[in-house]
Length: 182
Image (cartoon, rainbow, N blue to C red; front, side, top):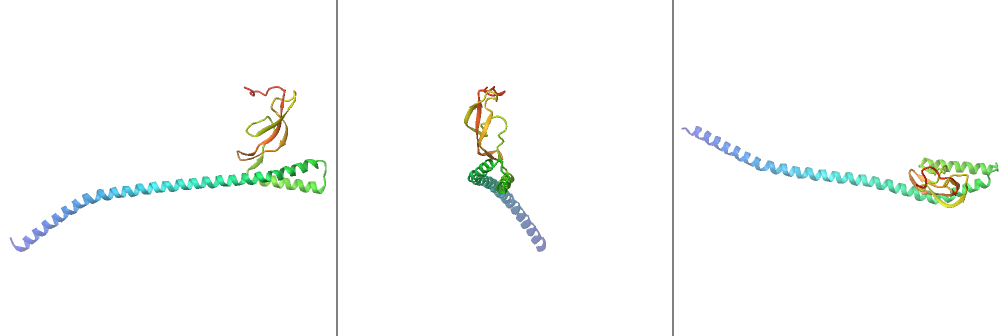
């Protein structure tokens, strides 16, 4: 064998050994990388889910804070609205400019409240413990039992949350309303 052939064979053997070593190294490194990649992927997905949960909770808390602030402000404003209503009731038959201005202000205030989803409780129909507070009763045999005889203080709602219950006078002694008292 000549020296060139011998060197070529040695080089081929070395390359084969090197290829085997690389294959063995890849066999060891690749699962380790895959396991490490999986670990990073898992941590990433968990962190992302945590972030989404935090964002969702923050949105919910921000909305709740906004609602509570509106309710608190409205509760402070209600006595003022009640006084305006009493003033209008007292000047019921008057058509003075002052009364007209008062009516315009009440209308404007009701529009502002309505634009913010705050509305007066509808007191038509029967007593509803979810919306009304019965503070007194009156006997009236002509009206159904537990119907509203008079509204003493108007209630307000924000969406489906009661800000203030309507204080009402209910009737007693009349016929039972169908489905009531069961």
